[in-house]
Image 1 (cartoon, rainbow, N blue to C red):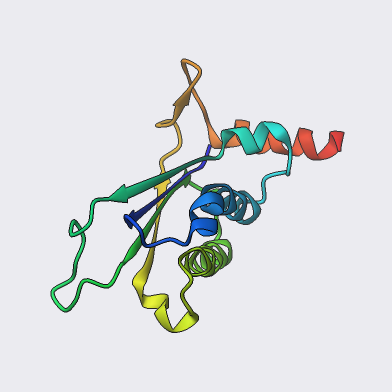
Image 2 (image 1 turned 90 degrees about the vertical axis):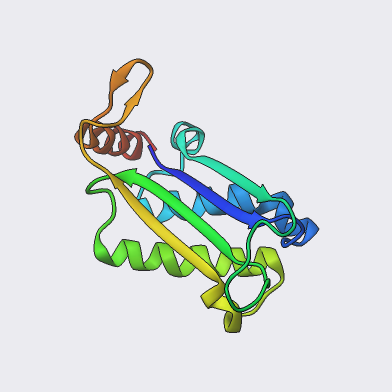
Length: 143
């Protein structure tokens, strides 16, 4: 199942953005994965907000906040088109949450990590992508 982690310097998100960013990013991830919008799949999309202390993140040029989005999905879950869409929408979501504009887009990096089949476990068992795809298809049919 997918995970999404946003690492930000403390204080770099608006109050409203801080309140909504985790659910917003999880929804973006599920949409681009093509998962059905069901309670089960929403509960499996884990979202983390990691806030760094002031001064813990800078560049060699300046100390304007930078945002790192780490996405982990099963290998095969995202086509190249879906990866591109995920990166674009996750970037826009972070910019909104920080009160920034598209002109600040280079301050947001999105790294997509694909977990090799057979190396993901949940509930004490190995979870395979084919099993997840079958489960998603079944939940779509039930809707």
